[in-house]
Length: 172
Image 1 (cartoon, helix red, strand yellow):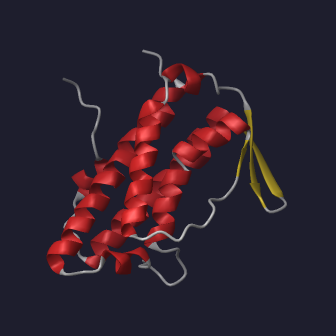
Image 2 (spheres, rainbow, N blue to C red):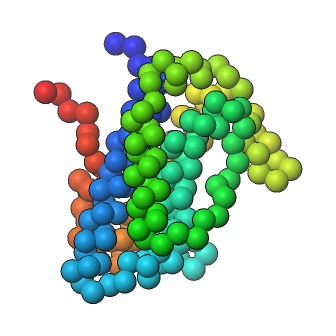
C-alpha cells in the first residue's frame, strides 16, 4: 500500500488536533469541577523560560492547518501572537480541526515537490512541501500538543495517555 502526503501529514494532524480538542475540553470540564479559572491555565508554563499554554495551542493550529496553507503559499513563518482566553483557544483549535477535515486528498497530494521557505527574521530555510510538513511542522505540532497536554496534567487535569493519543487508526 502506498502512503500519500495527505496520509502522513493531514492524517497525523487530524489525530493530533482531534486529541488536543478533546483534552482541552476535558481540561475545561476539570476546571469547572475543581473551581479553577480556565483563564489562569492560559498563562501557565512548564518552566519559566517556556511559552505558556496559550502559545502551545496557537502553535498546534499553526503547525497543522496553517502549515498546509504555508505549503500552498510557498512561505511559512512563526505564528502571530493572539491574546485569546481559554474559550477562544478552544474555538481556534475546533476551527483548525474542521478546516483539516475539509481538505481533500488531491489538494494536499498536489503540494508534493513544491518549494516552501521557512522565514524567521533574516533567516530562511528552504524545503520541499513534503520535507517541510514531515520534518518541520509535524514534529513542532507534536511538541506543542504534548506541552499543552503536560501543562494541563501539571495543573491537575485528569488526563491519561489515551487522551493524548486520540483516535488511532485501528484495524476493524
